[in-house]
Length: 116
Image (cartoon, rainbow, N blue to C red; front, side, top):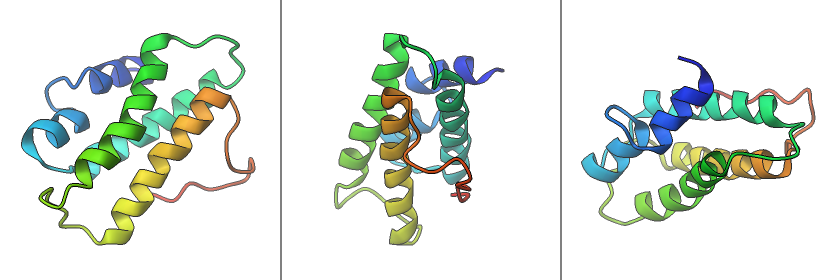
């Protein structure tokens, strides 16, 4: 599946998606998040030079960067990983939203995105 089709499934919270697990199961699947953010990065790079963006993609990036921190920040949301992991993951969502919308990565071209 290509990255655009993958993001459509993720942003629509289809079965097995990171977003569905967070919203319905109160479960942060670290591997699912990693797949999601990597696809988001690749799409940011692919779309960087485009003058117009598809609304559903913009909404998906916006929603993840706003909903996930708010929802998972609730005191009753289970967070078995170290707090630094969640901080880095939420920062990653914010950075990706910024990159996608502005068309400019917040980092220098030689930046290596650490695995999460």
